[in-house]
Structure formats: C-alpha cells, structure tokens
Image (cartoon, rainbow, N blue to C red; front, side):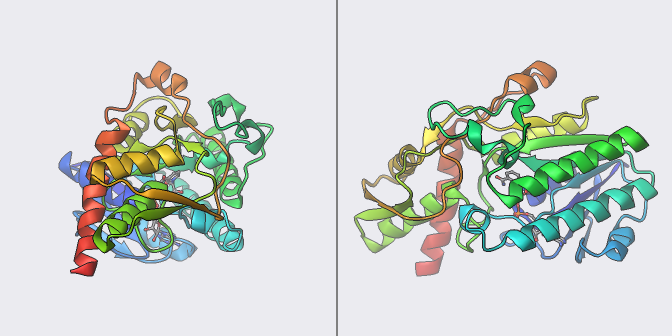
Length: 324
Ligand code: NAD
C-alpha cells in the first residue's frame, strides 16, 4: 500500500487532499496544529503538533512516504496577510516549517515532496492595472511581492529548488491562485474574499439588511479556483516528471464587485454594495495557465458560478445554524 504524508491536514486544502488520496487507497498520515474544523479527517493517523519544532518534524517524518504534501503555513485572507500586523509571525512560522520539513524529508531519503507556493510571489509592478495583470511563471523576477507572505513563499520556493538541485529530491512546486470551496475559513478573520462575500450576503439575507460592505472600490480584480480543480492539478503535477514552479489557478478574472453580484445572484437577493476602507492587496491578479496547459494538459473544470454556488450553500447553512 502506498503511503502519503499531508502536512497542514487540519486546514482547508490539506483536509480535501487527505480525503482525495484516501479515496485512491493510500495510507495517509495527517499532521497539523489542529483537527479539521468542519468534518472529521479520513486520515489513518492524525498527529497534532508544531512543525516549527525540528524534533517534532523528525518524529512525524519517521519513515519513507511515497508522497509528501507540504501545505502547512501561517496563512489567511487579506485581513490577515495584507494589514502588516502579522508579518513577523507569517515569515518566521512558515519559514521554520519549510526548513524543518524539507530537511527531515531529506534525512529520511524521501524523494517526492509537493510545496504549495502562492500567486503572492508575483511582483507588484506587474499587477497595478486591474485589466491586464501579468503572472506568467517567468515574470517572478526581479522580485517585488507586495507582502511578506509572498517573500516567504519565494524564499521557500528557492529552498525547495536548492534541495532538488543539490540532493536530487523530486520537488514539485505550485503557485496557487485563490483557492475556495466548502470547508474553508469563513468567519475567523482568516477567510478569503469568496467566503467573506458569501457570509456577508447570507447574513444580510437572514437579517433582512439591504446592503453589504466591500473593502476597497470593488474594481480590484482576481480569479478563483474551486478546490476540486486545485486537488486535481496538484496530483497531476505531483505525479509528473516536472518540478515547476507552475501556476494552479483559474483564468476567469472578475472584479470584486462582479464577484459580489454573482454571489447575490446565487443567493437570490439584490443588495447595495457599500465600499469601505480595508486591506486589498494588488490591484489586479489572475492566473496565467499557458504553462500548465502546455506541460500537463490541465485546465479547470468548474466555472466560477458552479464553484461559488457550492460554496455559498455551504456557508449559508453555517450562517443559518448560527442564527437558528
Ligand atoms: P489553511 O490555513 O486552511 O491551512 C494551513 C494549515 O497549516 C492550518 O490548518 C494550520 O493549522 C497549519 N499550520 C500552521 N502552522 C503550523 C505549524 N506550525 N505546525 C503544524 N501545522 C501548522 O490554508 P490553505 O488554504 O489550506 O492553504 C494550504 C497551503 O496553500 C498554504 O501553504 C498556503 O499558503 C497555500 N496557498 C493557499 C492559497 C489559497 O487560496 N487557499 C493560495 C496560495 C497558496
């Protein structure tokens, strides 16, 4: 039986990853500071602990896993990452995790490891125009990410690539672009914009309010990838002969106001949008999928509307439970 290790298995993507590879017949160990919040893990073994601790890393990386998915990070949406208030924690915690995990894998002679980087590594100067942001993989340098979160990801990409070059590890690196779906953070301050808008619309609906608040002028653009597509692409990359780094995202770019209207349409309400000050990140960003299509023949299956509908219904049921 093949064995996989999922680090960050209590988080959004890690939990979905565990479920998927369990379904493929793997024996799976999950590791995290916490259990998944919204449904029980299917991992055969789930170890609670802190990957910043090198001893703990050696303890959980105690055998030869066929596949290691490194998804643990100190992470959140704009309200967590772009205020600047959490920069020291974000850089220290995530860098420690990556340094320890990668070295423990090397010492155990584990070859195949996936690292989840981010679209946040791309330079701010290429993302000033909301209509035509540039995120081709080769545009990462000269580097100028707009957040410390992005700088840590770029450092860790280089760390993984160095282990690949020097020690022959089969490292796989994806730059995720705004992954969303059911069972993600939706109201703990770490939620990202699709979940936040779904929650705001569901709350306005239940309270009978006529408006929602949106951070910024609503003209900033993004694209969003549904979780099932993210897992498909990650597995395809992991099992390919190619290291990356590569974008895993959607090219369906919308403004934040358009996203809000999409959510309202799904919810069957028409609310005013009040624009307020708030952290926003870059003006425009969308995935450039030319490279992943060329190398792996991958493109997303879920449209934004389909994915949002599933996500909205999940969040609406949470909001209804809270107010029941
Ligand atoms: P998440 O916050 O839901 O999951 C990360 C998990 O890591 C959490 O459960 C957290 O408890 C765990 N963790 C943090 N510090 C830890 C520590 N010291 N020891 C053990 N576990 C620890 O985030 P996610 O959305 O599932 O993202 C997974 C990965 O993908 C992260 O590396 C993230 O930076 C990257 N990524 C995600 C997105 C996205 O849109 N979701 C976009 C780009 C990159």
